[in-house]
Image (cartoon, rainbow, N blue to C red; front, side):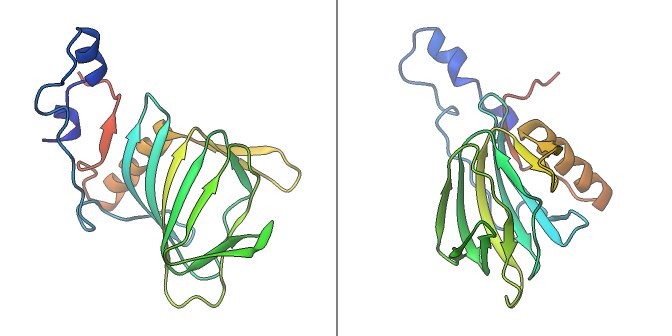
Length: 178
């Protein structure tokens, strides 16, 4: 069953049914190689796992080269991160280094600049679940870009098309289909 085949549980529950029919409760598995990694042209790679357009949730794995630094930003919602390999920290909190197995919670509006350790051997791989928008700022604190569930889905699909790979396995909730 693909995510587009999954019935809308909210509609089902509005009809007064307590237990959803089969298909609304089926787990969806994505293997490590089921979705393509796409290069972002800046030393990072992205694998989009899931978006929920109703909740503004986007779940990604991101791989960063040693020494990579993300633009200073904040999120309008909470962020949850698990580091799978490598190490990274926030310039604002250099004493908290995330290494393989580390879990990080970011409350909404926490301003930070993600920095990958210069001495890493190989890529740093991090799983993020992000609610709301990512708001990028320049050195003067002016907004220079915004990414949210809808825009990351569009960007991922575009990069997949450019690279000749299929994004078909991404779990997408809340997308209108014709």
